[in-house]
Image (cartoon, rainbow, N blue to C red):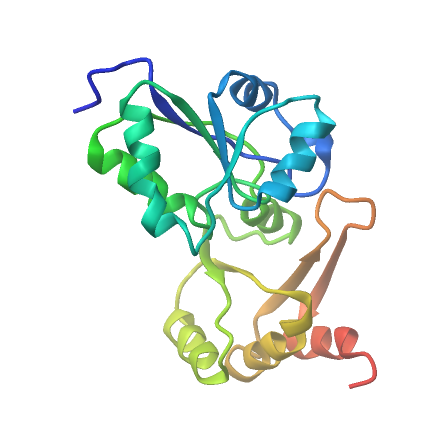
Length: 216
């Protein structure tokens, strides 16, 4: 059951994962029409808005704050405000705090509009060159070695491409874990997607570990 005040809504606004040319017309319109823009990082979203000449009040809503502030955002929507939410890049809610904001809005029965747009996970899946028609998105790869092995063991028999996010400074360790548990699997490392120096490296995990290891 949605809010009685039909004018209010939460709008989930995807943003480019690197190339600002990927900002959609609908996303720009939603940001211009919003009463307030909530952002995972106001500095990042502020630069985006400035690039497109949009002036809006920004409210920080990151992982540390969303638990205590989600209810307040939902109340504003119920009162008739249009609240836009942006993550740092890509589709909000995919491995970022936006998921909990949408859940809170759905629970309260207020209107939620999710705009389509850039997603690093989907982009990497296609760019990898896999011919598997299914993929499993695991979010951010675990940091601890034991957890990495446990996750990979659980997914060993899954008939799907496995997609994970990982930071550049932990890439070699992640590839080492994959080489240990899934040595036969073809692997692709997709970096700087949509940017000038986009790179897609393919091979076994062991081969890619050597490629990215450098002087280690």
